[in-house]
Image 1 (cartoon, rainbow, N blue to C red):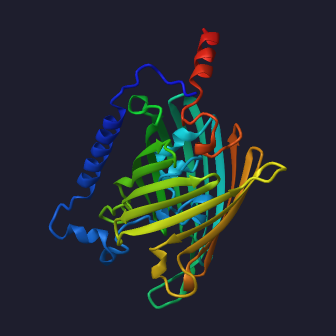
Image 2: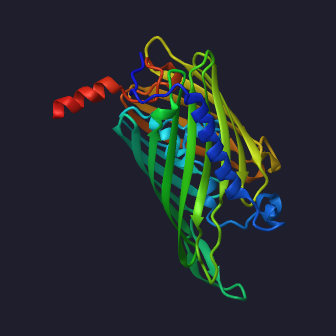
Image 3: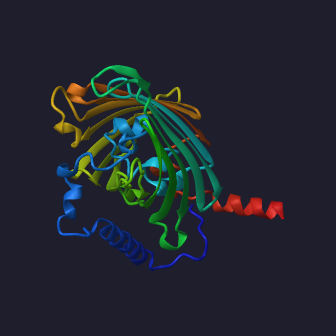
Length: 363
């Protein structure tokens, strides 16, 4: 049975709607054009106008196998990237590492760690590093004069909190924020600072579902020459549901600065062998990548295996004539990870009775 503080209110549902209204109002302010033609910034006509595009690459083999439809799932340490509000689902601590072989010779790595502070809040740190490889440097007539090695890096600090006042026996609500330092080096280097803010709701109905919204890459962009460039600002709206045991479907609608809005779809089927553990099969679709010609662009496939506290995941993403991208993830969760809607206690909060007992013992 769920045990929550006595500060809960009967009007929780109206409070959730009010909180959602505040978030929507904030989004409208963020994306309200300052000039009549500023709306073009959120169209394909503005492609390439935002700097530090590596922030759009996506992390986690599980998320990428599901087409990136992860805004309303984000239930491990990779929530530092996808939706900081999702970090509150972690039981005690979680860690993940991912390596990706992207198109061409581009590779990038991502690592994140999250730790529960108390029944209400979780803190996390993460790092993302890219390596584009060596590129020849030439003079104005094409003579080779050496080489340079473009690299990007981003470091984040994330805080997520469960909003007890907006929760009751039928749903939980959480919010989160990430602050980020970013450095990009081509020949010269430039720094930038950004942050994300997100919200997630968990609904324990007959068919349980989640809703999420996040605004990513707000803040000050890099200055390579005399002017500052903008970060790849975007808003993501997502939903996920579990229509039956061990099956999950999800979808996101994404509004990026410097591109047309697009949607993503994802699905996951879990298989629990009698010998223990868990095997997951995944598939996804990204409508933005459907524009790439050749092959099965936009399609993603993947699988995952859970061994006690460890999870190993692999994702294959087709990018048509550009090639294929592979992502490999290794994650560790303590205690043993279970899907949110299959946990014994239907709540994303830690065990309040256990926490209270520990406090009493420490006095």
